Image 1 (cartoon, rainbow, N blue to C red):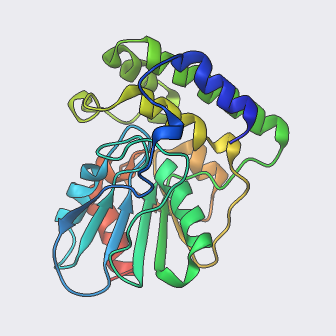
Image 2: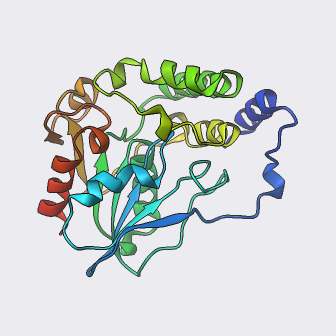
Length: 248
């Protein structure tokens, strides 16, 4: 992360309880979502989520081993400016949604020999110009400031009022129990504005039928019917069906 972005973090966190130089944990927390045989499936959630977001999808899968990862600053993982976790085996399938999809792409490029199949849902592959990236960094910095300053319910209302989530009715109880300064740091450090364009050969890209923005961006992606941007929570059954057809 750039020195400028580091300064923006300290600007709105002030002397809060997160001290980057004191963070020693470098591995994300993982949860077993389902037990079973075969090559494990590893799931990365999106911003504001945690590993439990994938329970509905896993409930529609046959007998197989499913592992959920809490991304940095989410669930039981503290924030840290590097991303890694203990892999469940030498080779596994990887599924990621939105921010988690972007981190899944980065992980697959870093450790290609570990990945069997890669499924990316509602994830942006990268912005093409420096102007676009700077604009996104500013947008994410504004959201991070709101996350610090507003009551969590007010922030969640404003976040999910964005047009991208027009078809999604969020359950705020799933989102309230988070460390908001850690979430803010995660939003800044793992911003799309800090990402180059990412491409992984043979990755499976899926988008929601009602997610017109991402359908326009990626017209060749597999479409999940009756869902918008938050595919895995809006239509977990059909999401699981894609995993069955392409991975299992």
